[in-house]
Length: 297
Image (cartoon, rainbow, N blue to C red; front, side, top):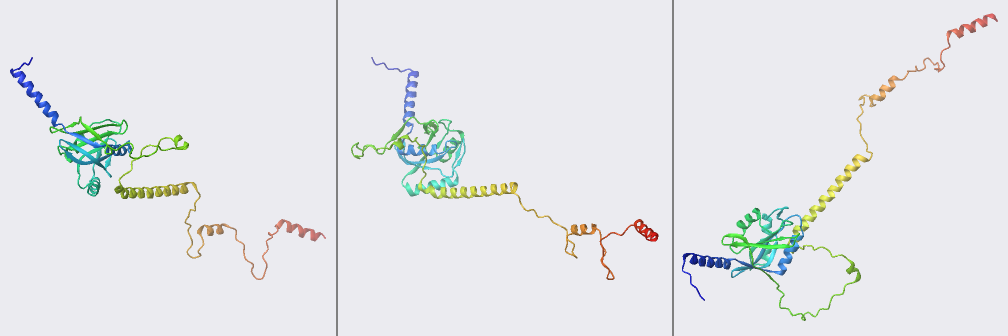
C-alpha cells in the first residue's frame, strides 16, 4: 500500500535525504596503481623514525582522481612528527615531472606517519590547504609500522577521509599461460638464509644528490678519524718539549752553566817556571818536630 505524506515534517525529511545523497555523490574517489602503492611503502619503510614525503602524479577522471606515479620528496625537511617541502624538494619534483611525466599533473601528495596512525595533523592540513588546494587533490598517509593506509580529500570545502579507494593492477588481463615461465629453483643455502628487509631504491635523478652526500660523509668521517688519532698521540705518547734557556750574549754559553763553573774551587796556574803541586802544605807542627830531631843528632 502506497502512502503519500504531505506534512511539512515529511517534506523536510525528503529534502534532507536528497541532500545527503547528493553530498554522498559529491564525495570524490581515488584510483591508484598497485605499483605506486608499493613504491610509497618502500619509501616510507626506508625511514621508520622520521617522516618522508612526495607527490602523486596522474589525471582527473570524472568525479575522481587516478594516480599513475609518484615522485619522492628529496631534500625535504624531515622530523619525527612532521615533514616540510623545501625549495630544493620542489625543484627536484618539477625536474622529474617535466622529464618523465610531461602530460600528467600533480594530483596530490603523500607522507608517512611512523608509528602514530592515519590522520592529518595541523601541519599536514596547512600543507594541503596551501599547496594542494585543488578540489580533486588528495593526501595519502601511510604508517610503516602498522602498514595502515588512508587517503584524505576535499569534500564540500572540507578535508575528509575518503571512503572510495581503488587499487588498480596495471598488469591485469594477462593470461596465466602467456609467460610460460617455470617455477624458480632455489638452492639449499638460499632456503636457509633469512629474508632481508626491503630497501628503497631512489629514482635515477637522485644519484647526483646522493653521491654528493656520500662524498661529504666520507670526507667528514676521515677528518674525524685523523682528529681522534692526533688527540690520542698527543696525550698518551712521549713527545719532545722545547724549553727556553737563557744564554750569555758575550760567550754564547748558557747562564746556568756559567753559574755552576763559578761555584767550583779555583786552582792557581803555575808562575815563574815553578810546577804547581797538588800536595797540600805540611802542617807547622810536623816541621818543628823534624827540626828538633835533627838538632839532637
